Image 1: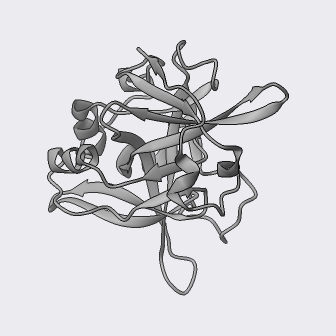
Image 2 (image 1 turned 120 degrees about the horizontal axis):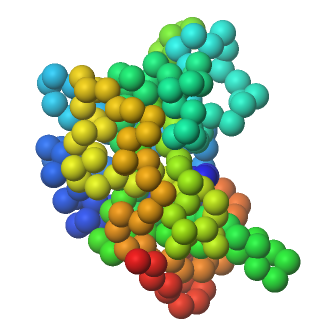
Length: 224
């Protein structure tokens, strides 16, 4: 599951963009929550681009915008079966860059938030997008793809975002080539070392957008 993340401009994220052929500064954000606008990377015949997308997928065929169903995450196991995800999975794949994401786990009777990032503080997460045109103006929306957690990550959560390597990012963004539901990029293993650090529980309130809520409250744990 991925229900909160951060985009803090840094050399790692800039390199991630350059590797994809994009030369621009990402719109940043701290403690970003579902239904907010997030940067979505896409690629077509004219090259790669970045657009702001509503983080809660609204299928193009939906009669109205609603939050009856949780559509901010898409389980990799159902991408080829779900009516909402089946078409985007075939031809509307995108990527969301982030510097870190946040998960909660029960500790001492409370839910302790943890910040998860990579060594270069740059993560590429698989996403799907769709364009809803049932209102006065079109709405570009997206969802983040999740998979079963790697064994090393399971103590924090049973699910994790599909983190893409550079080669996988290029393949995921190439919508001219299909990807199967059992593709190795969905595998539940660590593709890179992850750094985890406990945060203040103040971050649990999505209205707290100051970078101070990301200050570490304990030792960093490294997963390999």
